[in-house]
Each structure stands twice: as structure tokens, then as C-alpha cells.
Amino acid sequence: MDTTKTNPLPAASGKVPVGKKVATLTMGAMAIMIVTNIVSMRGMASQAEYGYGSIFYYVFAALVFLVPYALVCAELASAYTHSGGLFRWCSEAFGPKWGWVAMYLEWQMVVIWFPAVLMFAAVSLAFIFWPETFDEKLAKNVIYTLAVVLAVYWIATFVTFKGQKYANKLSTFGGLTGTIIPAAVLIILGVLYIAMGNKVYIPTDQPFFPDFAKFGDIVLAASIFLFYAGMEMQAVHVPSMVNPSRNFPRACFIAVVVILAIFVFSTLAIGAAVPEKDINLLQSLLVAYNRLWASMGVPWLGNLMALFITIGALAQVTVVISAPSTGILAVGRAGFLPRGLQKVNKNGIQVPILWVQGIFVTVLSLALVVMPSVESAYQVLSQMSTVLYLIMVIIIYGAFLRLRRTEPNVKRGFRVPCGNFGKWFVFILGVLGALVAMFISFVPPAQISTGSPVVYVGIILLGVVVFVAFPFIVYAKRKPSWRDPDNDFYPFNWQIEGRSPEQVSKWTPGYEPTEAEIQKAMQEGIAAGDVRTNNDVSRLS
Image (cartoon, rainbow, N blue to C red; front, side, top):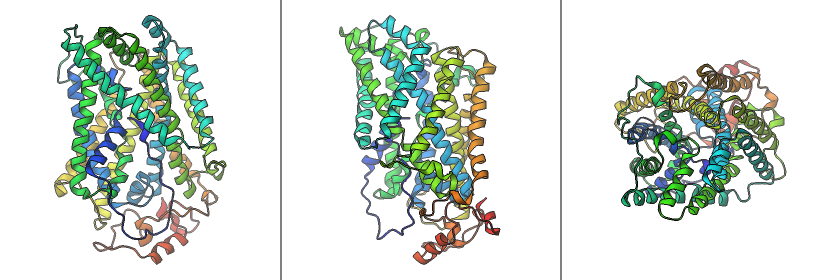
């Protein structure tokens, strides 16, 4: 997942849209947005372990996760176009509690992502120096890595306090230098390396189709699901597309082909230059650049590529630091966070939330001390992040299925194809794929040393339990005073109708609520999780 393009939750607004939105987003533009949002260089080395078998894993994950998830998110986004994104989708289906949980899990997943990507940045920084033996030794040093992770994160946080003036420029710059240019260079170098007759190290003893009985051998493949994360962020743009029912599936198909090509050829380029026994989850991408450039007679360009990737990773972190917490802030103002955490500074930055986020990142970074190596700490955090993300994904699948039943007449600009069969096929395929990947994520990988299996599984399990329980605890402890009186979050359909989320809507096809109905629902204080002291509170739980 490349989070340089993460879209924060739009500001809450209860205003009724004036006029019809003009569709301006083309099929090609949507395809490019999906590609740039999803593709990242960070995890490709983990798949090089599988040789040509990595092609199977990439294609399999795309078919059982990326494509069905994209279709589901597109339908939800085209039906529920008011602010809120996945919070609105899940709240419409199950009530604000589950909308809050889903929103929190997305934020928590990104918070766990910070230490992992900064470990990668620390390793990339180490490979700027010379010679390679020194780089590899420095990259494995726990103290060095922990110092870089914490220093860079907190410096970036303090810079963010000053405002997001350069966020868009950094986002574009980070995506260009950290992903697009390095990926293109890696693929071209891989082709030239093979064409020049150099020794190719791609393992041929790895089967193309995996042996699912050997879970330890396929654990690293489960991380591919997180490679494809972020579709829910781009789906919110579906209402802006020209003819979304036709163009969005086509854009997805184009994006999937491009994403697969980048992942597959980049992974094979790494495998061609680095022997299987030497592959390291964090270092092998940089080692591959060094060896590929050395085969061309210009080894120093490998150090330059390390600089590019380092700058790209740091730009990602700087941009993303405030983005996920912006969504938490918007939802928190609707009654889900204490008023103290809703404060912003003069630059409009949610400083208290960023302090909490920073504490989370600092504690999670201590996995470097607990685990036997930098590589194993990186793996633990990556798998923990994957599990949390997949839980959120399953909630979204559930919302999709339930809203088809409870709100069948809501106008959908895009629908999952093939009617009732398509609905169930996509739901079952997507949920089963997520459950399988989630289960595999708890199994220690056979390819790397993670120390005691009990400690490895225990850390991931404990982290998942704590992070999943936390939003439920916050929801249970919420108070009426938490709701910002100036909050004007657009009410949910079931609130406007005066029904509970599980009841079937009585709206006729094509019905649109009047402004008076919307304002009445908002004035009654039932918008987005307000705590009631009368019997209506049951409708919010």
C-alpha cells in the first residue's frame, strides 16, 4: 500500500447539496489514481522468496481481494455520497458503533504502518553509504534502526504541527521518487541484466502453485493483501466518474493489470539479482539495485537509488502523519472522542490526536527490542497491520450485504454486476479470502527467524485483541458532552426515517429526503452517534 495518496475524511457537513454534481473523472484518471494509491516498493522483496511462484500469489490475491473489494467499495461509494466514507457505509448498515470501529481500525492500521515503513526507510538510508558490507551491517543494527524510526517520526510530527501547506507537493514528490521512478528503473534493469547473460538467481525449485499444507512457507504471501490495501480511499471518487457503472469496472481492470505488471516484474528483477538464501525482507530491494547497477558498470547508482527510495519513504510519512487522524477528528466531533482530543491548533492541526498517535508509534517501535532482529520486528508489525485491515474489510463486506437488504431502493450509481448471484459471489469470495489471509498471518514464516513462535504469535494476537477492543471501550464510555455542538454531520438514512439500522427502509425507488426532513433529524440530535438519555438511545447501539 502506498499511502502517499491517502484521502482524509471530508469535513462533516449537513448542508444539502445544491444542484447535481458534474461528472469529471474519466476511466483513465481513475485507473491512474488506483495504481498510484496502491503500488509500493516496500514489500516486493518478501515475495522474491517464491521465485516464479510469486506470480501465482499476486494474481490470486488480486482475484480474491483487490477486484471484489474494489467492486464492493465502488457500489457503497456511489450510493452514499455524503461525507464519512467507510464510517458512513458501516454506520448505515449496523449503526454508529460499527462505523466508529471500522474508522478506528483504518486509523490504527496506518499507525502500525508507520514503524514498519520507517524501518524500511532506515534500511534505505543505510544503503546510501559505501561499501555494501557496511550498509548491510548498519541496516541490521537495532539501535540504529530504532533511533532513525523515532527521530524521523517525531521530527515529521513536529513539522506537521506547523500545518499541511506542502502536503500535496510532498505527496506527488514522494510517489514519484519513492515508487514510480524506482519501479520503472528496477524493471528496466532486470530486463537488461537478463538480456546481458548475467547469472539469474530466480529460484526454480519453488512450485508455481503453493502447498497449502505448509503454512510456514506461504506466510509471507499473506502480506500481499496489505499491498492491495487502500481501495476504500479511492472508491469515494466513484460518484464523480463519467458513466461509473461501465467505466469503473474497466478502470479496475486496467489498474489491476498495471499493478500486477509492476509487482510481478519488480519482484522477479529482485529475485534475478539476489540469491534466494540471501533475500532479506528489508534489504534485498537495495541489494538488488546495487548488483543490477554494478552489472552495468555503474555501482554508485545503487546508492543513488537508495537515496531516492529514502526520500520517497520519508515524504510518505510526512504526508500521511495527519491524514488518518483527520478522519478520526471528524468522526470524533460527532460524539466519539473526548472534547480534549478534538482540539486543533491555529494551523488547523489536531495536535492532541497526533500526540496519542505518536505514543502508539513509539510503543510499537519497541518491537525492535523484543524481536530477535530488525527483519522479524518488521514482519510482526506488517502482519499485525494486515490482520486489523482485514477485520475492517470484513465489516465493509458485511455492510455491503446488509444494505442491499435494508436499503434496496437507495440510488446506486454503480452496482456489483450479475445481480443477486454477483452480490453473493463477491461477498463469499472476498470474506473467505480475507479470513484465509488473516489465519495465515498468525503463522511464523519459515523463511526468516522470528524467535519463539509463542512470542511471535502472542505479540500479534495481543496487539490485535487490544486494538480491536479499544474502539468498543471508547464507544461504551462516550458521553453527551463529547459531541461538538457545531458538528453538522449529515444524518444517516435510517435516522431520517426514524427507524433502526436493521429495519428495512420504506423509501420508494428514487426517493430523496427533503431538506426539512434532514434538518429535523439533525435538530433531534440523532446525527452520527449523539448519546441520548431517553429511549431513543437504543437506536444508536
